[in-house]
Image (cartoon, rainbow, N blue to C red):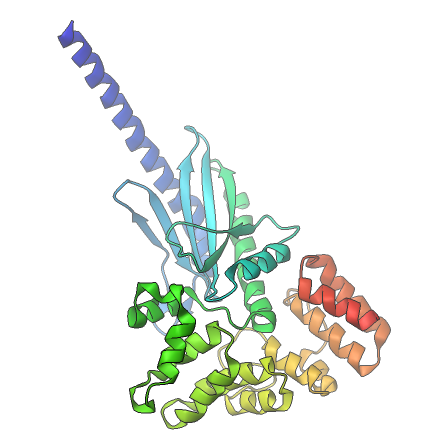
Length: 355
């Protein structure tokens, strides 16, 4: 009897292991055949060529596909088998790192994603408590190439829009690699009290300061005056192209529009675009508009084009409103809100302009 039970157990374990092995092969095949080809179309490209998506398997046998998209967005996909025909793909976009008021930022981003397939995802695989991700789940079969392509291009578009939105409204957002660099310098307990770490660094003699890490801390905490002071104290050691963009960001957040514009010009911005950037810089255009040079902002924006970022409509609408063309300005702002009804900042501004 014992021998029979043992043979039955061995047969069960063999079938189970064979099933798991087949499932893992199926999951890898889904990633290789459906997801990787689309990621290759959107892969980040530098002087060394395109960055190939990385397919990895952890000690538990879980597959993860990680890709850096052309706009600099980090995306990863984890497949989960449902049955022998269907697979659940979990897409995750690294939205940002927030050293302070993370819950508030997460709520704002969640509102921005209204009427989309995507949602804020906290506690994602590999995420730390001060990181925010954006994700979606998609059930696919082996021949669902169009559906996967649509969703990958969708999350890439969300990534581009996120860059615009944060440049305008959340410049304190840091990237995942910024956090890694800060943790390498200050330790993994950085998120427990970044304010104390920044204060301690600012009180050190200039010769002992690491200006780049302190600048990132000041940005992440929204300490714009401290950021400007760091840039002033270390002016000789920081290239103008870098310091100018930081200064432009900080002065804009302090409402010093002309100083922000001058700093952007010092950083090399031309016709509203920094070298190498795919799109116009929304923060620079916003500084022009608030600095009462809305006509120049409208000239740079030009006529509306198909496929341009939706935030251009918001900027055009604001500029036209300030230039006195209330009717066209309101229409563009409402067009923008039709696409992004959850943009709380735009909603507040629309109410202020109509008051």
